[in-house]
Image (tube, rainbow, N blue to C red; front, side, top):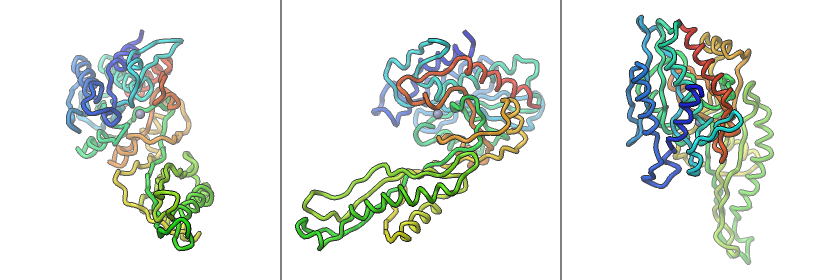
Length: 375
Ligand SMILES: [Zn+2]
């Protein structure tokens, strides 16, 4: 068993479910046990360790390998410590046919194991960087509100490049979409169901809006394509309106998930939807949002460190993915970020999550070689 595999099995056995997905004070909730576990190993490996408090009983764990000479640049390894919820049996790691099964195997304890093992092996290796500081930051709360990555950037932390751990099948990802959840409301006029001509039906108006969004608006979005991400999309996810059959409904609300491309802003998207619907003679109110939007990611693939990492991974061009992650938050905070890690997003959040052990080890080796190649 390799060091990477052993560490991953130990991490799977430490539940770190995001508290947002569990009842209050659930014993399996929170990332602290994983943060403490990693801090102890990092200290034994001679790294500098600190905790960065983010939320009550929830802290990012930060481990640094300092160079012998003055620091010329910092490289950040940034996987998240939390997972989505799971059955108890998923916290027992199981090895079968070259795969390791369990909650977090690919999302994203596999990345933690690969990044952390690479970092711990670096001081023992002959070619450790002389002027580059390597910082591992295990971040809390990625699966819910990204409080960990937001706290890290708010602290003023800067790096020349962040490698954000997520299952990308070891592909170097420089772009992902963002996500904007919006609530749209129509207003009508109530009347007796026996005399619908006296009212104005808000559900009927909304039905026309839903169709216009799904067909006309989607067709318009398809005309604008990002080279790595394709087109933005819209999904009408929920609808509610009306009180009972014999009343003309005076209100109807839908919620939509608009996946955004780099460069799109919340205000711009709201304006675009309103203008589009107005052109179809449909009127709608867009409610103010309560949650921060999930931003899109776009990192310049021509940056020298990104080019170096791409070459090391044997990849000519970067790729884009549909899912959102901490990389966008770090990037918005001024840290150029790419997403990279072993495992496949197809197995993330599933009842039978697993990772290929060969890919896990290859990921660790790619990371180690990249870190060794830094000045
Ligand atoms: Zn993840």
